[in-house]
Length: 342
Image 1 (tube, rainbow, N blue to C red):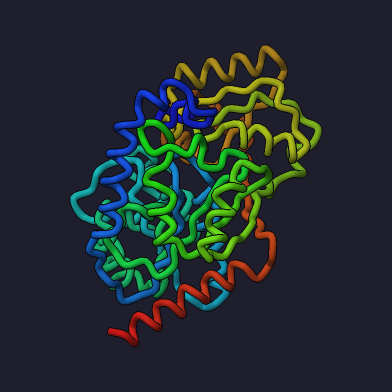
Image 2: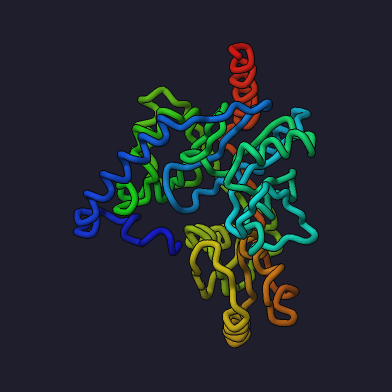
């Protein structure tokens, strides 16, 4: 489990939640007030935000990539806005796949940059201007930042994991919510239920009662043929590693051993040596996620480690084929209405 998401967040509320409830109430009050009172700069291009209600992985990055591909099919030139998980930049930085490392810009921006320019900065308005003025982007996709962005969002798509939902339903620090659901729904344009499971059903019903459209999607391995029938030591440093282990199984691979690490974990060389020795001793292959591989490519990997490593590549598949086009179209419509109003 991610270091930023304690396991009790995803369990039935217990004494820890009760003890933290005063802090959660205060945090929720402040977070909701900040969302309502934030001054958001209006950009000269449509802004689509892919966010979530909670701390922890919900599969936002594959969704952002899928929607960027759709934007390109609609003859738009998308660019990504990301805060990143690496270094801190005084000025917005556009990811350079040839020279940047995950420690420098973060793992998710490296994945996004394979599909469109990515500006990494906490100041998303400055990043947006950089993409518009210097890279010719005419459609902005913001990966995260739903609660904290200081730019106007034309369409906010909130992704909820079907297996984990919103955890125990409590606000930080007693639970994973970044603010009360009712406060966040005010700014939500649509809800995307990701994967299989029923944990998200209560918040899906709440969003539906609030009149928000509900979409469904799932992730599928894009390299199933190379995994079927093979046995692996699977390791991952993502928000919910069990999702990765299950996806390997769905692709036909056997997860004989699994090693979860904290989200965005940077592997030390001795950790990788231990993984390789353990896999060799059990006659297993090594497999990890695309996010982990992005971190490993620029890290201190033992000789030959990357050459023997299998990487599970995934695609986002929407329940209805027209959904990506609808989301892009509604973002464009909202932007045009905003421009008409001045």
